[in-house]
Image (tube, rainbow over all chains, first blue to last red; front, side):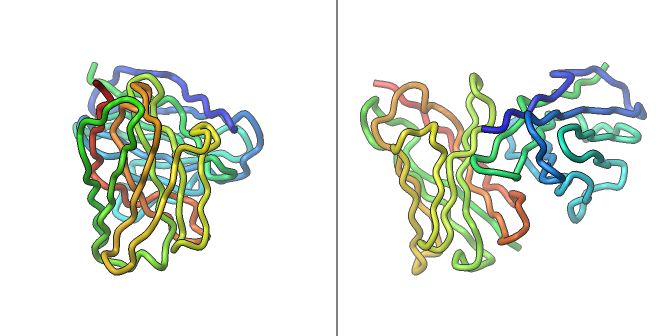
Length: 107
Length: 118
């Protein structure tokens, strides 16, 4: 299985901050990398697919980059509704695997 | 608008079979892949497997042959059966859609919590 490692596991930030989360794959997954957001008690929701394509309806303050093994999710200006847990997920090969998550908390 | 809703018993005894249903509305289940994913505090998000219109299934080897997925086109729903459950199978179970060639999961159902306990 492909191992996905996110960092940091958690971070504290303020509204308006720029936030960056990284995800590393254990082997080259090209751009088969998706990001999702999960709020407490809710299901994950897709934010970005294929490493950098913003999913329909997702605010433009979210962006993704990277290819191969190293990927980044950036929130350009953190909003109150963005405090959540973020997961990366590879879809390069089965079984699909997820990172352990990054919890974004209010400072 | 596509909606997915999981349902099933919230409590299952060890060694028994866990059965869940994902009711799909807004789209025909014939046209997409349907994945099941679970989330437990100890293991995070774990992809369990997918099914495509009873033609193709793929299961996570970690489940060691305990998982079976099926579709009912007359009811437009997808079913999961996980046998010989243990407390390690306690989790929230989600179903999610994947379009052919798109390689991402969207949308997800709201999830259903299953506890394995005697």
